[in-house]
Length: 88
Image 1 (tube, rainbow, N blue to C red):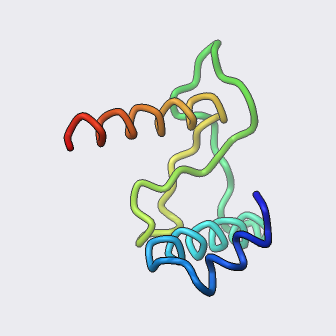
Image 2 (cartoon, rainbow, N blue to C red):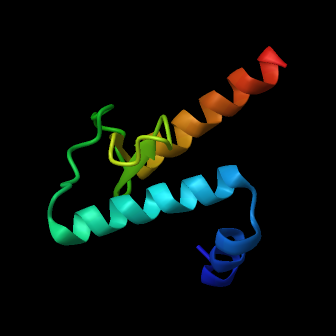
């Protein structure tokens, strides 16, 4: 992720962007401190691929995350995007 874009969003972005940045930072710090440990991909299977990612269903609860491999995290976002577009 481009750090300059993130810094700009932190200061000039929308409230939603700022909330997401804070939540991601809290996860990063908790992992560094050892108070939050990544688990296995919740959709574990033979098709898992890539590192484990923290997925937020609610950015207001920054340490309440779902652990997904990169492939399943991307699939989840694609499913959510499809649902949001079809609901509009």
